[in-house]
Length: 286
Image 1 (tube, rainbow, N blue to C red):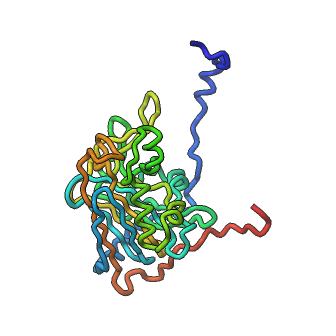
Image 2 (cartoon, rainbow, N blue to C red):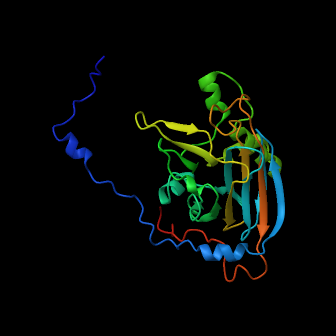
């Protein structure tokens, strides 16, 4: 049936479609990624803590500024949903949308995770990624995306009419509440769009719908970050396992994820300082 409100294509439709794409942000003014600094900082680093995030569950953990933290596959392919907060102010948190615009839809070593406005500063820098080799596959899929949100019980109920209590949103909410002493109702608004660690995703070429496929991660794979400020982090081991078949249910084989925190040896950071808040002045109004 023809939509009476649909206008026919104009005579110059193809010319309009040939408009040249322009990358939105010129990031040349950002400080360059200094791989040598992070390599030197990592030498002789001491492990100060670790925890195992159980399958279909979440945990929150602290990462002091100037420390590394590593997320690892330890038993089998598993996707994780990562949240980051300013350890001293939960209202400053990871801004996946701006991170995506400043870097890419999928992140790897050298990319930074930025905080929301008005702080807009680097929360963490990705320093190592054993899946960097994956690149882009024939379906347009890549690993470690910042385009998806996180599986949640509200969408699951809307689409399936099922109440499921181990979605990543739920896991992160409970983990944050347990860590901070907040009630679930108080903690939930602080849970935000995630970095989908180890997840392989993209958009279908015909309908441009968000898709997932089995993660290429295997036991021993990891992604490592350097905390550019004091962080409270939350990680959920997604109920979708490797996200190759389903999520938001108990039908998929799931595995735990290992979190490790490392403190650089004395003097290894040199004159490094934690990231400062964005310098934009609001004194004359927004």
